[in-house]
Amino acid sequence: MPLFIARSSFAACALLLATTVTSADSRIESIRSVDGHPLTITYYPVSAKASSGDRENAPVVVLLHGSDKGRILWDKAAPGRGETANFAETLQADGYAVITVDLRKFGDSKSPGDIAKLRPDDYEKMAASDMFAVKQFIFERHQEKDLNMNKMAIVAAGPTAAVAINFAAADLTVPPYDDAPVLANRTPRGQDVRALVLLSPEMSAGRLNSNRAMSLIKSPNAGIAMLVVVGAQDTADKGQSEKVFELMEKAQRKDEKRVYKLSPALRDRELGLIGKVPDQVEVPIRNFLNKHVKEFPSAWRDRKNKVTG
Image (cartoon, rainbow, N blue to C red; front, side, top):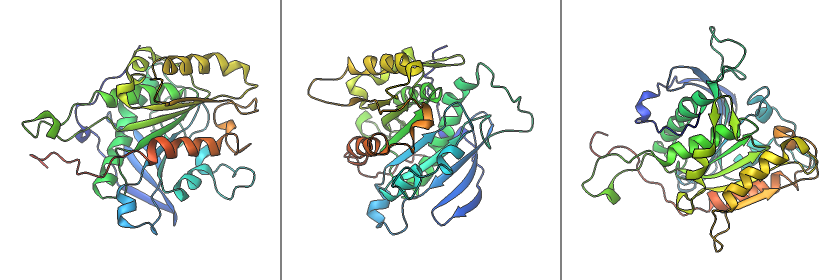
């Protein structure tokens, strides 16, 4: 089933502010999805050494797991060759705020009543409920001037690529607050995703299909850049990856490069692509994010409703 239903209000996300400090540079946060499912994330804030101006305009990257284990593969992953930090820490050092996420039924995002096996509609709920809770968390950090939510990227792997695509499409359709007579002066609530990095992407997951969502995000007017990464020796994922890339590439303007494909010399898939050959994977991803997210010209602005606060 296609899904890009925009949430009408972030207020539906009841965030639990139970925080565990894991290190000087990251902390674990417990939040709740729109439909009440407990979720666990790790937040890597912008460096405390950054100036206030740098913090409030800092981009934010959401790192989603693939089909196995959860966010621990981002948080605990061994650094790549020649690297001294995992990829989340590397992005943090580059000036990004970073959030690693356990979507429902993965990693630490499990409730006592959860059935271990994923249900066909769980991926729909990840896109329509879990990701909007993450967006609410980002909104709150934005209002604290710790980042700029209008400079947002998502890195996803395997089945969560469909989650990222559908969420990005849904975010495009969220209307602004009705807090000014003129549409151009109203406070936006969506249109914040600037880029997607998809590792061994799958177009569908469970009942979640990305065809209609792709028709939205591929439009040049959507302003979303995409980098598709698939191992050159990964024959299982090459077909799906090519499909995603071609759908986006056909729609890009000739004078505006925003769709890319990366094929490192690996047979690994999903997060197995990280930490092996950084010069072929992590470095190009960082360059892509810098160009399309970090350098995106969008100054911090108050995102509260001007009428109701």
